[in-house]
Image (cartoon, rainbow, N blue to C red; front, side, top):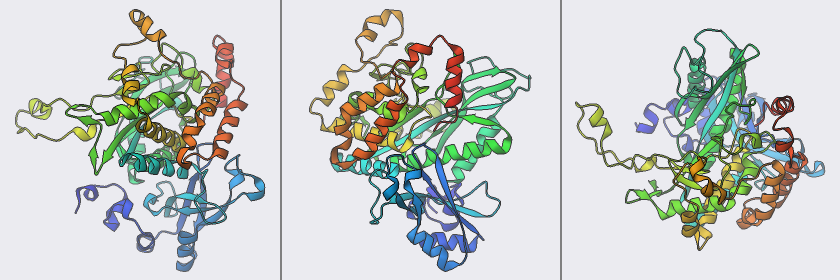
Length: 500
């Protein structure tokens, strides 16, 4: 049995004996019949960033085959504001590779994510998952390579304060029990996400923790492994759904919001990317960052202002993106530097065998670790439209290959110092700033929209809808207006508490 299947926690993979990417309708029907499944759920994203659900009772085999083949009709105007009510009927059709056993259903249920199709049976050009699909295809057509991604999903768990072993305020990074209170909840979330097909790297407690009005607020993070970007988006969507549902069972509240309260760490959605060709990571060359990676970084440097339109989608996003805090506000990149927008994290490029050093009984393994190198963009947060965020990053990285001066752009935007220290003030002053509001992000997207529309990736109607929605917040001066008004700030936090 293949190593990828042998210990795979997804029950469908284990029982069918094949990877999820190989699932067919015949496989789904076989599993349903042999495992006593009684219901099927279709799930699909809407413009609010949440998964919607359609439930089916399995009446008989013919009906099961019909819904798996034909999908079902839904009202698109209730899902996406840019779709006219007069032509709103859409089809949702399941993608078999996303099938998983619903961990919350009392009645045995298989759940699958769906794609949207228009009245003519063609993929809906403006749908989030179709936009990402087009972006990935355009990237491959331009470069001959595959765009991969993974997310760092940060969130707060909120529950009554037990008043035992209090954690140190804003010092929760990798904290253990009993000072960290929700490790068991996090690991249960991780197990369910893995069973649903999520490729998890690890989980841990994060920096943010505090008590407020008798409640504990503890920040946690679940980080994924890099996979093709379309899979990465699906996994993040399902993960957020699982975390919220499990929290409801535990009696906890959960928020992915970018701003939690004044003076405390907000939650980001850092995205790591790598570019592969025939299974080989192309981010390194002779142990150093490759020209491929530099071109991708250059593209992100150029489109950074408009990427916020998809990664920072409500006014509280811009209370996280403020100067002199850990979240980035300046368009630059650097090695292992957490003060920059795009960071090149440690990638196991040192030619040493750390395992043999730490474990003298082990023989040197000489393991190839080049697959671990990624680049990370740190601006997005939990309000992000995940499919459109990853699509915008695929467009940006592709754009880097279309720029004649990409390598020069990358070199000019490189920063190898902490730009927030006093001695580096001059360096900081020379850098372009990210937008400071939804309105400013909309302006940036409008200015750069032709790059997103190139090759038909982002539909004009969807971009128009995004720009209109961002401008409707009317927040151009909001950050300055309420920065010293804690009460008004908390009103905004409560309004967008369950965003994304």
